[in-house]
Length: 145
Image 1 (tube, helix red, strand yellow):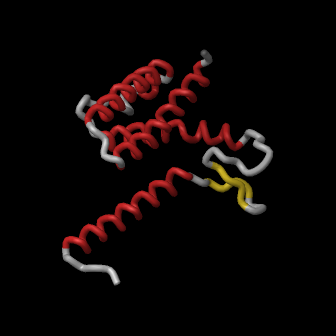
Image 2 (image 1 turned 30 degrees about the horizontal axis):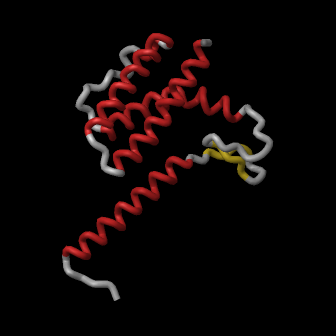
């Protein structure tokens, strides 16, 4: 497989890992899920270092007991290392309309970054806040209405 193509594929897996890890953690993941994610992250990082020796010393393998949120953060950092290369490729493709892979088209303004994952994270944060307020309200014995 061509080196650049393999790097793109591995970065894509890491990107999906960040989204999956965030969702699974939000739903109450166990240690089995975290250990699997750590193992996969370390394998992908090792392969990326083989393909791109510049990564050596920039990113470290994760210990087996690393929590899922840290795995997601580490994967996101590696993805961000390659983000300019990956985004620029999506911008140059002709999708026949508004771009969908992280890039939207503004009304006559050219490309506009649009990250659906950030919107999802914002929604999860707001739902978490609402749930916390509801738990606090119930603990205080307050009733609606």
